[in-house]
Amino acid sequence: MTIQKTKYYFLGLAICFCHFFSPAQQSKTDSLYKIYNNKTIADTNRLKAVHEIVKSYIESKPDTSIFFAEQELKLAQTTKQKKFEAKALNAIGLAFANKNDSAKAMEFYLKALDIRVTINDREGIRQTCRNLSNFYNPSGALKFWFSQLKKCERINEKQVKDRREIAECLFQIGEAYNTLGEKIKGLENYQKALSVYQEIKDTVNIVNTALELCSSYSLIGNLPKALECCQKGLAMARQFNYERGVASFLERMGDIYSEQGNNDAALECYQKNLTIVNGLNDVNLISFALRKTGNIYSQMHNDVKALECYNKVILLAGANKDEMAIRWMYQNVAEMYQNNKDYAHALEYYQKILSLSEKLNEKGWVANMYGCLGNVYRLQGDLERALEYQHKYLQLTKELNANDVWANFGLAAIYKQQKNYRKAKFYSDLAYSELKKGFDARGISDAEELAAQIDSALGNYKEAYYHYQQYIIIRDKLNSEEVRKAAVKEKYQNEYDKQKETDKKEQERKDALSSAEKRKQQLFLWSVTGGLFMAIFLAAFIFRSLRVTRKQKQLIELKSKETEEQKKLVEIKNKEVEEKNKDILDSIRYARRIQTSLLPTEKYIDRILKKRSKNNGHSGT
Image 1 (cartoon, helix red, strand yellow):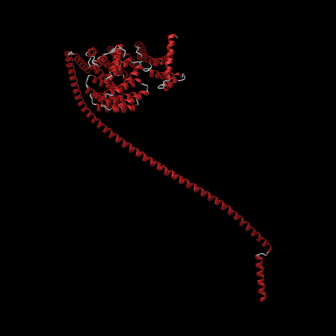
Image 2 (cartoon, rainbow, N blue to C red; image 1 turned 30 degrees about the vertical axis):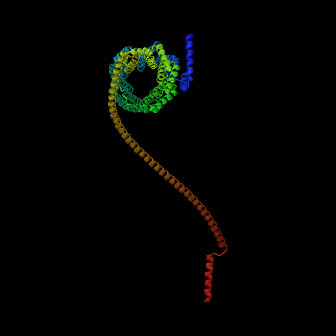
Image 3 (spheres, rainbow, N blue to C red; image 1 turned 120 degrees about the vertical axis):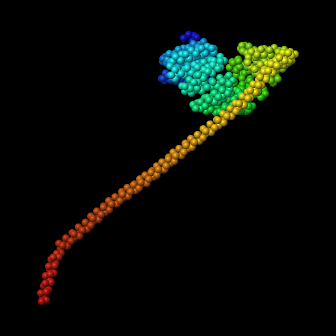
């Protein structure tokens, strides 16, 4: 092992154990690592366990992810499991992409793609192709996906897997056209992709593609079509019982209503979305829904409700140690306070964002917070501190080679308030020239107004008049746009009311069906319960009858036994009596024999008597 590899190995170990003992992931990672490290467990299960560890660190800690992915790769190669080998290589590529090392990312993606093509891993091929396309500029990505589409079309289109690949290519071509600004071509390809997904009944991708269609219609300003697309998509998602899809369409409809200023309709959509994502128990979706709901409450000047939503997001983000999400919420809270002219609280939250951004070493955010702090101090009238932060903002944007238009604009506004019109003019001209290159009508309007005020103060009345004229033209256009938006809002309100009425009827129909079903279930339940009680009663009756019969049988047996015993006793006594009688009779017979033997017999006596009688007769004659 070389010194460089040894260093890298121990670095990986250090990172690994550092993160093992982080409170958020310790328990899960420990259990997964035990599975991976247990050589008595099947290799496939060990590979699955280590891949879960790789995925858990791939975004937050890419170095740790690479370390574990290399362990996965080594085990996959040893056990000759090509699918996991490709997974490990793809994960390493993704980790390098998160480290902004494009060359290394491409290298590992291509290695993963080679294996996936060899083993014909269709889903893996699509995944790696998506990853690879991210490294191309829009034109390059377009060529890449067109080449993939041609490959797919050469395959038998009747196979569902291959049709799914064709749809994926069409979808990605739509994405590339959108990025190039060719929205119509993007829409056409999304439509083609949607048709294929519907043909193969791919629920998730039907919903996702329909969502992209909604976004595309919004981007080209065709909001009625976008809303129509959302309503159709919502119906499909409900038909499929795809709750995530239902939530996504409700959120998108809320965005459209919000864009039109129909805050009541937007709030209703966002609240329905929040109810669904709460049921899905997805922290990220819940946070996003709460944030959007809070933003609408803020626009409606219901600060209590807005803060309630924002604080819930902050608590969720804090539990997950998601400092970026916390920062976004601080920004929402700060902007809300600033819009309500509560500058003290706005400054407090901007300072919190600045501290977090410095901790995360995100200089772009640091620069923006300098600008926000400078602007709030200006609104407070603390122009010295406003200048301090605005100059920091300008300096850092130059270091980052970023757009410094708003730094210059902020400095011009501060110097104007200080009545230092020459410096104000210098920075105003810089901001104005940059804004004129873009398409931010409201920004140009603000720049024209500021330039008119500064030129007027300097006595440049001709230039002041020109800028003021331009300001009026743009302002009127914006006002007419507001009028148009108000008209569209009214149209949307009518459509929303119709849709609401339709939804109400649909809900009533569902409630009626639900009530009928409940009644049916209750009837069934009562029938079953009644039958059960009857069965229990019958069983109890039979049981009681059996008990009575058993007792009666026992009594009869007992009486029979007693009778038998009495009979035996009588027989014994009869026998005793018979024996006694026999003894008596024997005694009598014996006595009689004795008498008979001692006394004359009856015949003898009879003869004697007869003889005497005869003698007496003779003596009388």
